[in-house]
Length: 346
Image (tube, rainbow, N blue to C red; front, side, top):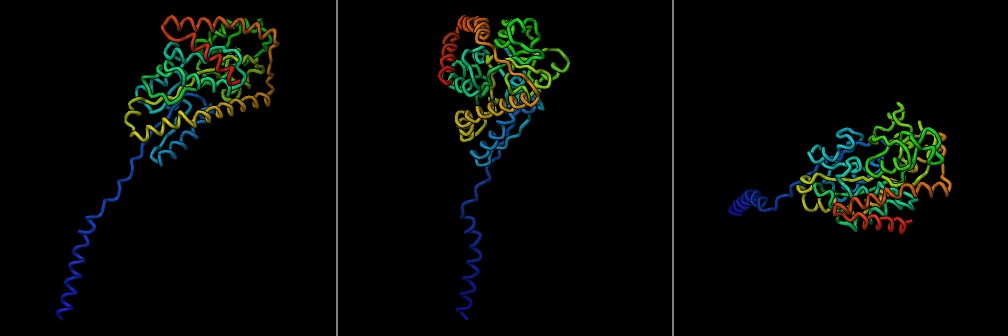
C-alpha cells in the first residue's frame, strides 16, 4: 500500500513539474520580419527594366532568405519618367529607376554617357566601360548622395530612326528629331537637325501624330516604343547612349538591418552588373529583329561621311569637358578615361 501511495505521489510530482520544465526551455525564435519594398519607374512595357527586374527580385529573395518582398510598379504606375527621382526622394516608393539626362545639370558627370564617344561598337563594350568608370571616379558616385546609389548603367549607342532616309548630313538638316537632354540634344543639333525634347515614353505618340520626323535612340526603341512601325530607316551612328540610375530612398536604406543592406550592396556591385549588360543586349536584339521583320532599312554611312559626322560632333565633347572643368569637376580627366575604356573594351 505504501509503495502504491509513493508511486502515485511521485507521478503527481512529475506531472506538476512538466510546466516548470517547459518554462525552462528556450523560447522558439520569433519569425523574422518580412521587409516589404517597392520599385517603380516610368518606362513603357518592354523596356530593359522588364528584363532586369525578375533577376533583381529573385536574387534579393534568395540572398535574404525570403525576408525581402519586392513589389514592381512599371510603366508609370506610380511615377512618370523625368520626375521619378523627386518622387523617390518624397518617399512615394523605395527604389526608383530613371535617366539623369531628363534633369540636365543635376547629375553633370553622369551625362558623359550621352556624349558621342568615338569608337563605340556594342552595348557590352559601352556598358563595361561605364561600370569601370563608375568605380574609378568617386565624383561620379557622389552626384547621388541624396539617395542610396545602387547602380549606374547605360545603354548605347544611339542611332537616327527616321521617316525618310538619312544617308548624308544634308539629309538630316532641319528634320525634327526627338532627343534626350544635355549632350544628346547638342549632338542632334550639331548635325543640323531640329531637336525636340520628349521623354522616352512619349515617343510613340509623337511619331504617330507627326510631332517629330524621327528619334535619336538605341536599337531597343525599334520595338519598345515601336519606332519601326513609323520609321522605316535607321541611320547607324553609334553615338552615345543614356544614363540609367537605380536609386533607393536614403531613409529606407538606413532603416534596413545591416545584413539586408549588405545583400543590396553585394548584389548591385556584383552579379547584377553582368545581368544588366545581358538585359541591354536582349532588348537591343529584340529591337534589331523587329526592325528586320517590319522592313526597316539599316543605313551604314560611308567611311568618308562618317568621318565628316565625327568631326562635326567633336566640339560637343570638348565643350562638355571644358564646362565641367570650369565648375571644378574633372571633366577632361573623366572624358579621356572614358574614351580609353571604350577602346579597352572593344
